[in-house]
Image (cartoon, rainbow, N blue to C red):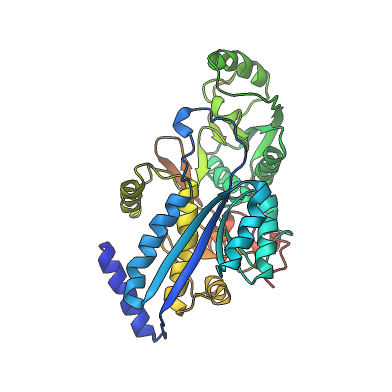
Length: 395
């Protein structure tokens, strides 16, 4: 089915369902908090200046395709800020009457921004923060999570490893707080799916640049020694949320083993080689629009704004309360180029979605894996299930 045929079918469904659709101007903002970063391990991974923002441009195009038939206009502004001026810029956005905000930020800033937005009755979409606690005891009623959590990512890796019968893991965790949080997610995933952590090691972050002329020489000497003498294991699981060592692990281990997690085979929400389930047309439209390849951050922002567009189309309202209520309802579903419709968990605001396992070249697999069953949805095998979440804001 072509894109225009899909649009016409959607319009027919709306007309048949009898929704009273009225003209609306849908104003949203994307607020990206930029942090000091080391250069990536590979120059192929340099961050684009418009990362995330490019997804917003494509989302406005897609939302506008249907919106033009219904009298809905979509306007999304983009804002790059530092942690110090993030709240001030949010205040300016809210003062302009915008009540739909997509945020790319770490967990601490995200919570401060969500709390400030709640004072103005605004709805916030998390497009990057992976901290599991944001979907747990630290959840907020006005905060919906499009980005997968650490636990979802770890569970996706764990399911594939267990499906491959690689049940004995060497867990290598970084020394930074974000690395330790991701390591805890992998520990929980191991217990959840029947894997065994035969040994854990911590790779200390000593600071400094990761890219020097002699970097490969040092890595070639250091990492084999670091992993020497480890107990027998099937796979190395890397928990490196700050991206300073995991990229070096493949081919530098003492004992040759697959690497999964933050290096080797990585769990992502989207990558530029993904072509299944109609993703090719998404990729080609993005590349034509931006002259570069898509990153997960672009996809997450696009998906957040598409949630808004779908809710406005179905309800005829651009009010935050109406969009939130529809997104959390059983009626909501959205195609996302991952083989099945995505929906929100009504107990913590997390978007259910398949996770792609990417080796830097192609999609190796997609989790949830075959055979991992759930009484509601196999997607709820990834991340915090209802009984596991301490979130009470959605009650």
